[in-house]
Length: 297
Image 1 (cartoon, rainbow, N blue to C red):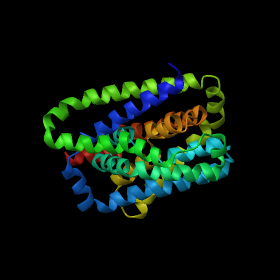
Image 2: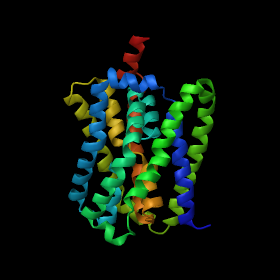
Image 3: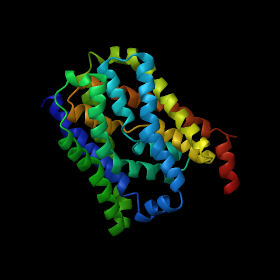
Image 4: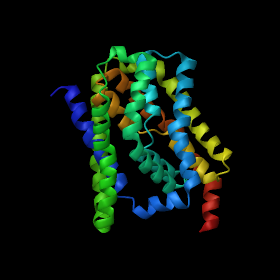
């Protein structure tokens, strides 16, 4: 069984389960509350993910003069809104977890349509398309909808019908999804075992700049719209922590580009560094987050 076949088999399956896990944690009332009560934070967060982050990505690509395939891969990362990792980081960092999960859910409903369209534009703009096979737009939309949109909707429906079973099922769905994603990471590493060290050395710094700039931009955007500290932190995470699984789906399963998948993987690893610092700082004894939580309890 070759690496290309494994990538097209493992990644969609793992991504489907990840999105299903998001769906079964949600209730319709959660989304209705976000739309009715927290509409401002939701809209600002979506603007940060869908508009501000790609703009930051373009700036980083121009600043460092990245090669076409690397620039295209980086831009595809910026077009993939945050996934379950950002939800976990927000929870540990004591941000607005409900907003984080809501942004992930809404982003998962939008991405199957925006990501293929913008990926086609990115391939043309960067010139990477001439080095890749044709990017079939309609099949890409259908495939992404099947592995991201469908499982979220299915999960929400299952949660409405079988809430207790979904609560028991969630840890198993999450565990299988994580195992599948780790297997996919192993496949990407295997496919790039010769070029990955060089790519890591050349572009890890670029990815760190992108992650830091994205997090800072998300926080400043929330502050600009007079949103509270918890929302500022949440948008820093949601704008900076992208859905590497979805980006790998595009670069690996749809574009069949091991080099682009390696770049996505590098960002998926590097973006965890500032996130880890945020989680640590927010949980140190005497931190403002812990003090605020203690006052509320």
